[in-house]
Length: 310
Image (cartoon, rainbow, N blue to C red; front, side, top):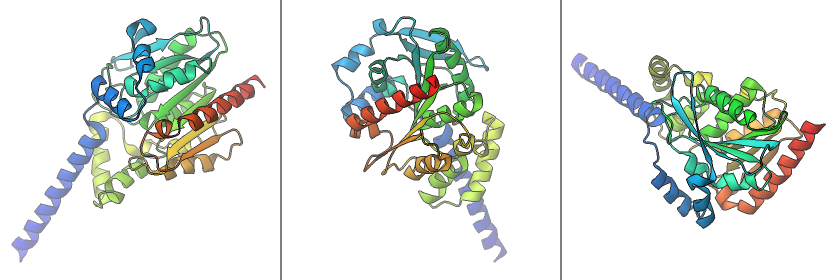
């Protein structure tokens, strides 16, 4: 009997260790997408065409390199349609993605009168780095990119952020951290690190959450210098006094729709906007409702700029 109990305990312990390692690898070390795969993804979403292909030619942008605080080389791609422009935006992709996947938004903002800085986040695309931190260290990188963009625009320029998924959460965290941007577009961003992991670990897989989450955070703190308990955009932005445009698909199974809705509802700001895209999965809202996305973004940007002027 004692041996049986001991064997069961060992099996449970081994299972938990395996689950923690599996969760860690998926959450932090998942395979990054290549540029070729990114293009295929865009083709499948009907977002890749000859115009975008031309936009991605090296002759159409200035390649920029900067260093993170840890010394990682980070890559950005600056589209300067307007010399000495007075409007700029930084485009921030999601986890495992790269600047190519986020590139359909370049023309969108160029057409709205913005110069555009498209970036590869640390440990993604052409940027260096080993780990992802769900916005904790990425927001520090975004601070560097913001200074670079600011230096290329007129003094007092209208500057904002557009992010998807982890990029959206990073933009929200940065906005509250520095309070030096004029607007944020948060497309399918998560509201809280613990709640995101609870959804991924327990709601989707039915695995025991508390013990896995505790051990996962211990490992993250030791190896990556952050924990999911430190991540809470919904708390960060509660009193952030700039317009935020939230976008989310109702069929998102990676970041649940309710997270954007809860962030929007928690702020109670009349200048915020919310686009709910029916039956849209993760990061496909723009592809599914392109015209509506463009129209709402246009009105949002106009109102945000008017708010800055007044």
